[in-house]
View 1: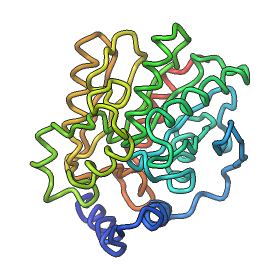
View 2 (view 1 turned 90 degrees about the vertical axis):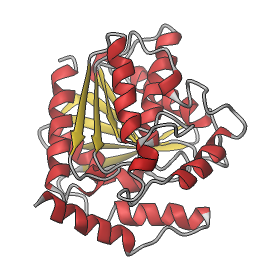
View 3 (view 1 turned 135 degrees about the vertical axis):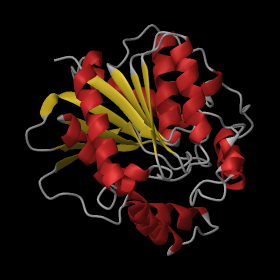
Length: 295
């Protein structure tokens, strides 16, 4: 059943091939990732942080004193609040928390470390709103997963309070693309391929080394981070990014849970309305977040 469901998402993606221009790529991601409507019972509120847009969401019955800060994927060059709105809102419902999605600045107009600076500013904004760090979860998919780790590393190194936990979906943590799955899964991953990632990495790094730890957290010092849940699909070229970062986190005694979801493609919870495995992954993430945030 799950294989048949993921085939419908593959068909959706194939019906809208990736264009060449950056503007069209950004429009396509917003379109295909938001193909399913947001539930009508979710309350949304717009927020501005510096030059960035952000968005609160709150599902009925959720605890507004706990917050999921979310960084969208899109290779640091695309993705938006719109593209990930449903996924974020439903995770907030599952975790019974409010959410705060950040529309961080994108490359190539704003290369590294602009997105990281924005992520840090968003966390500090929440602290200024009197949200305790222990009541904040940080999460993200793909590039947003790498940005989640980089934000926590910056906070730790600055001696600032850390969030209660973190959630990484299909994280991109190695901008050198050295994982074996980059080639082993190339024929089954409908979204992410080496040449495409090389283009995105070049735009984001803009001359910075791909081994810079805050751009490729696979190379970072990781001790002292809060509990982390990592979710990845078995049909992803980024499978090894998730497996390797889980191993590195575990090796330095960071409480780490790794879930590998059979047949699932990159960032599959985006299409949870169509995928049983997407809804199950969001439910698992919600339970993890709810368990680890301070009451």
